[in-house]
Image (cartoon, rainbow, N blue to C red):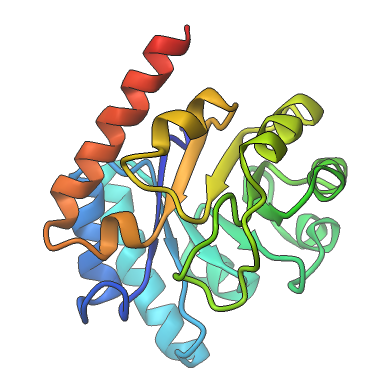
Length: 211
C-alpha cells in the first residue's frame, strides 16, 4: 500500500460533512490513506466514528490511520496511528502495537525525521511543508529544501503535509516526497471526490515525469 494521496478528515474544513462522509468521498476519488483527526470528540464518539471509517476504507482497499490516539486505533482495528511531537513516543507505541501495525510520525526537521526512523516509525511526515491555515499550531513552513534534505537522510516513505495544493503538488513530489497529506485541498472543496482524483492524477503524472 502506498502513501501517494493521504487525506485527513476535518468536519469544520469539510463544511459540516461528517468524517465518515468525507472518507467515503475521498476514497471514491482514489485516496490511498484516510486519517481520522478530531481533537474535540470524546473517546467513545471517536471510536464510533473510527469503526465506521474502518468499514469504508476496508471496502475501498485504503489504509486507515487514527491521529494521536493509539488506543482508539487499536480498538477500531485501524491499520495504524499517526503521532505528533507531543504524543506518545514512537518507540513506546511500537512496543504496544501488534506486528504489522503502521506508525507514522510528524517531523519538522531532518534530525526529527532521522530520530523517528530510528525509533520505529513506518513513515515520516514533514510538517508543515508550507505554511497552512488548517492547523492552528502548525508553525512556519519547512520548505522544499528541507523536504529534499529529509529525503536524503531517511529511507522510509516520506509524506509532505501542510499547504499542499494542486498547484504545488508536482514540486513536492519532485523534491522527494513519496506522497502528500492534505486537508483543505480535498475535504474543503465542494466536490471532494473530484478534488481527490485531480490530486491523485497530478501525483501520478509528477512521478511518471521523474522516472
